[in-house]
Each structure stands twice: as structure tokens, then as C-alpha cells.
Length: 267
Image (cartoon, rainbow, N blue to C red; front, side, top):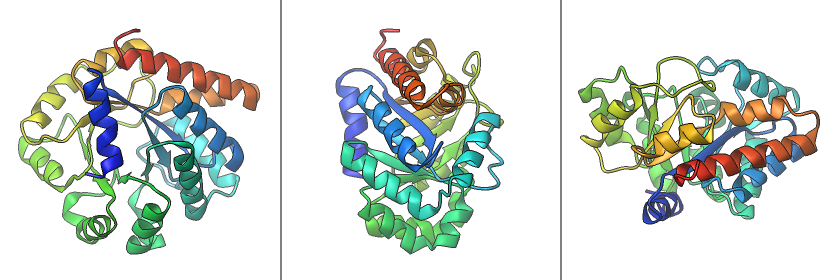
């Protein structure tokens, strides 16, 4: 496990809490604003940042993230821009991963992407649509450059499948709390605790739960059984609903502060 990513979970465990992981698409709503929003998340208590690599066919994402991704692409966000943003927020103090569909990485060049990510001080990559069976070259590239691979499990995953995924994973295991696309929900799926328990039977890696968390109370609930709490659509919605950039910064800071209190059991 990448030492910086490991430190995120070790620090959270030492404080008897879950780690808070926040997601935004890079370049949303534009390059400079994106960096400021990521930094605001870090400053307000987000432990690790998922830097989304915008893709023109985000089939696994709900309407909010699809809209944000479209805005980012229209603002000229390329893979090189994403990696530049990651490098800048890492310099600010973020522990940052890329969240990307496989196609943009493959088109960029697997080894080239891993090398560039490592040089930008990225700690890992979440690839929601890449299966372990097809990840041979990716596993070799990430091992070569010391960055972590994060694969996903879902409530529908069998125990055999969970073992396959956790064996291929080198960072944390991303436990999708529900079947379907991303999006903030009124409540987190009741299947999430059972899924985390089943994953724990197969690995000692940290397990982070995503899909649906949007409030401090929900973060507090998930933190009782998971090692990490992932929040994406709620941050995106906060920005989409803001009247201007200053309002977006305030909204992101307020949400990150609330969620940070939640994973600490204070919500």
C-alpha cells in the first residue's frame, strides 16, 4: 500500500474514526476554481481526495456528476490537465487519487499514466469499470511506480468474486453500497454493513463505502462499520447549486466540515 494512503487510514484508526474521502471531477467548473475547491475540501477535514478524470461516456454516474463532467470537458479538461490539478492539490497537502474509467487511461498509455501520476505525487487510482481479470498490464504498471489500485465490490458480489477483487487490490477496497449509478440519497443502502462484513472475511485492507452518503448523520452511521466514507455527488450538488464561486467555496467547506464531524461521531 502506498505509504501516504496507508497513513490516511492509520491516522483515522488511531483517532478511532473512519477516513473521509471526497470526490469532484477535475476541471469542474474550470481549472483554477477546481483547484481551489479541492483545497477547500482538504482544509475543512477531508482526509483523501478523489480527483475525477472527466470522460464523455460516464455510464456509472448519476445526473449530478454527469452534468459536472460535461462542464469540465467543455472547459477543456484533458488527462494532462487532471494530472496537473492533482499535482497542485498534492502540493497543498492533499492525499490524492484519480478516479477514472479505463478507456482514458488506456488511450493515454498505461505505463505513461502510472509514471505521470507518480511524478505528480498521486497515491492511487480507482477504476470502476476495470475488472481484475483484465488488469494485468495495469497491475504491473502500478506496482512499478508505487501507486495503489482500487477495485470495487457491490452487494451482488459473491464471496468468490470478493476474494478475486481484494486479491487484486493494493490500496483500499471500494464498497459500493448499492447497485446503480452514483448520487446522493435519503439513506445509505441497508446492504452496506453486510457487504463490508463479507469483504472483511477476505482481506485486511481498509474498506471504504461510497454511493449515497450526503450528510454528517449518514457519514456517522457508515463510519461505525467502515474504514472510510466516500462522498461525491453531495459535493458536486453543492457546487451546482451555488450562485457563484465564493458561494461554492463556502458550500463545499460547510459540507466537508459537517461530514468530517460525522466520521468523528460528532454529527
